[in-house]
Length: 123
Image (tube, rainbow, N blue to C red):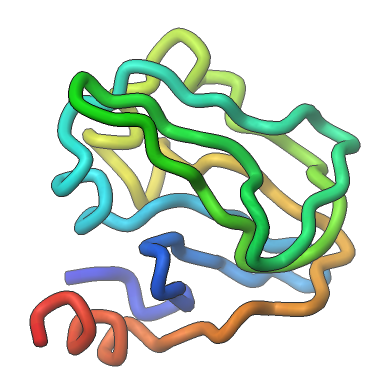
């Protein structure tokens, strides 16, 4: 079961709102489809991101995929543990495998509930 306290994007990211800050990661579906993650290219703290535009990329043994910002705002924290252990995204995409936190979040892209997201990936 995907956590119901988060919202989801059509590009397979999840968003957990906590006041004016959000935590962003990729879904279990995305991590399974991508396969073994070997490298993450994430923005630095203080960088500004724009909703719907690339905020970084994920490299797997078979491809490199873009990660899209679900909101506009400033990167307030990057999950530094992923530098040495990118496989945490595969092992625990909803917990230890979060990617970035974005403060002053605005301009949300269209977000879905967990049920709506399940319908999209299983439909």
